[in-house]
Structure formats: structure tokens, C-alpha cells
Length: 127
Picture (tube, rainbow, N blue to C red):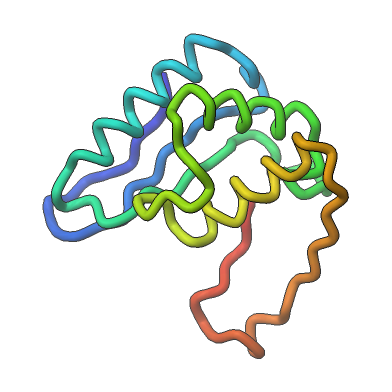
């Protein structure tokens, strides 16, 4: 079952793990996380949903450079009908979805990370 982290009724960002290294592509997990996303989307106090893929902390590649992750995320987007521009998804998750979509479509993607000092304190890591 996907893990949903939401412990408040105040305006909050919910964290939803939509996949894990050990079960990428699992249709049951995709279906369950799709239901969880829809439930979270309907909660008035949830202002945004941050999508997570677990189990890759020790992998040096970016998540969008891992074919299994890209395939899983594409299947998840199709199952949920969530577009990379969905306003219920955090900005960072929107970028992640866009990168996975482009990779899935075979578009070469070059990503350059800007040091946090140049963009402000809201920048955070994908992992």
C-alpha cells in the first residue's frame, strides 16, 4: 500500500510515495497510489501533494535517468490521468513528472542544478 504522510487538518503538503525500488511497475501499487492521490486531492486542507519514489537513496543517478522509474511514473500518470502541470502537485513534483514524461518519449534531457544560494531557500533535493 502506498504510504501517505498527512498528520494535520491545517493547510499542508501531503507526501505520497507512488513507487519504490522493490515494486516498480506493480499494477496493484499503481492502482492503490492512484486512489490515494484522488483521496488526497479531495481533502480541503491538502494544498499540494509531493510525490515520492523510494529506495534509490544510494543510487547516484537522478530518478529520471533510471528507466524503471521513468516507466513506472508514466504508468502512474496514465492511471491517475495526472498531467505534469496538475495544480495539486508540488512544483518540484511537476518538474519530476515532466522529466519522466520527456524521458519516456525519448527526448534527451539535460538538467543543470543551480546552487541554492542563487535561487533561494525553497530549493530542495529530489532524493
